[in-house]
Length: 242
Image (cartoon, rainbow, N blue to C red; front, side):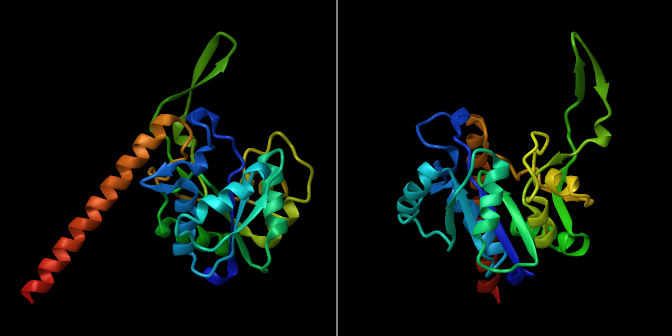
């Protein structure tokens, strides 16, 4: 599975909603850049996969210099375009291998698990197109002028990344012209006539968008570290008694 899957990590946003002088993909999360965590996550989940990172043109050199301060998994950096659609297309054109599957990932979703990534890739290998999704827990209302009405949330899903597709489907779909109705890669592939399979995502697979998201992410990282330390302590205690 790993050897035939390539990864395109899209980091084209300016990240102004999170404040600060740098885009959010470069901010530190647990003493590592968000983008570095996302790259390393996919290098761990899909060993041997080609990883292409798409950045705003003005930040490609910055990232090459900045990432050199950290031990980041191997990846290629290319400049993106005006829209996310254009950036994904740039990532596709930069691929050097000939994968059977391509995963497209938001750079600012660093908290997914390798297990989820492998689950999405396996589903895409079967169906051709698979995306992670979770059921909403809030209620929704649709507005119509000054009025509104309730929406049946049981029919709604919150879509995440990575979104994984057959390489030939994705590359052919991205030969079309940009349409403002393309909200993600699944919408581009669906417009090309392919059905998209929904696979269970993870509620902790957060997209870091607002300042508060970073506080939540730090708490999740701390909880995971505490869990790992507890497991290590139990394992050590078990070994000592054997």
